[in-house]
Length: 343
Image (cartoon, rainbow, N blue to C red; front, side):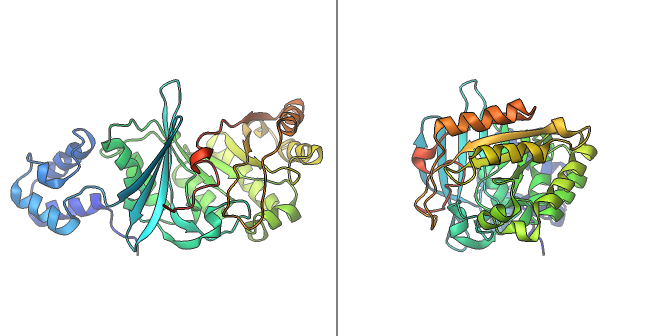
């Protein structure tokens, strides 16, 4: 059963007290326009209603508790305590041109065990609720940070959590966060039912597919999910996604020294993405330098600059759209694959 979001509960409380409908709008305006973070201070609504909100939901609008913040150049990582004495992390990235981007978690831990990822070593503890997902952003917003863009690239596999779609509904609701669909990115290791649902329900939300090897046997070794959803099937569904939405699909590729950064790998990635029909130009590869972590059982290391340049040039020479992702936050374990949910 889907846990009710606080916004649904507010609606129900307003209705149960036979309050006029505009009371709901007053409460959401207090949160999202006036940035009031507790119900007691919402003096625009009657005390009877405030008391009932506090009784049913608690005084604090946010259900997460920030327990630790680490800062680095252009990056802030917050560790939140959630119900069940668990921890999740969210990251804020500040770009020099004034853009603020957020990397949020969808699960506590992750059950898919990609061998190079710190989060996967924890295992899956549980799915985050719609409120726990969206409250990560609400925390930043109520602390006066603009919500320019959001990616589900924190802890967990977003499309393995059915509540992700309830969270997307909250984030795109004009009365609540009001985020444009194109400012949201969902990253997946290739969960096909989730990709289909995203394509149907949120076609304008950006989709990133984590590839990390163009060879099935190696990809299965690095990412066991490949046995369940093999690469050729995922690529076929991504073709459908592009045809249906007319939107780019981003291919994330973490470069691991001596493992997936060879000439052979670069040529195979190009081969995989070419010849996919009229829409092949809508594939865009993001090459990601690996961020070392002590948590993974095998020690992987970052590709040297020559290998990165070689990989980039081979893809470009084959007509593939490609960029090397700028890395932030590796010094505070806030970069891709490093989130571990520990103090």
